[in-house]
Image (cartoon, rainbow, N blue to C red; front, side):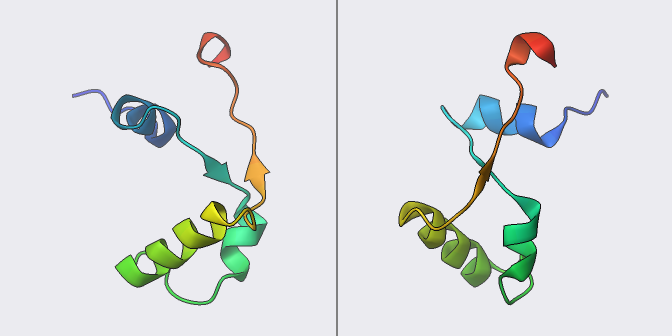
Length: 61
């Protein structure tokens, strides 16, 4: 079984996955694996308060 990188798995599941900057996510309180923290992170992205990072296009990966 060949493992896919997480971003490629998200590309298959979602039409347009988004990556948040690691420094921003680490500053959010909570355990990042909890459902409530995931909802909080999604809301910060929804309101434009999440700093995004770039992923290279599929041709370059």
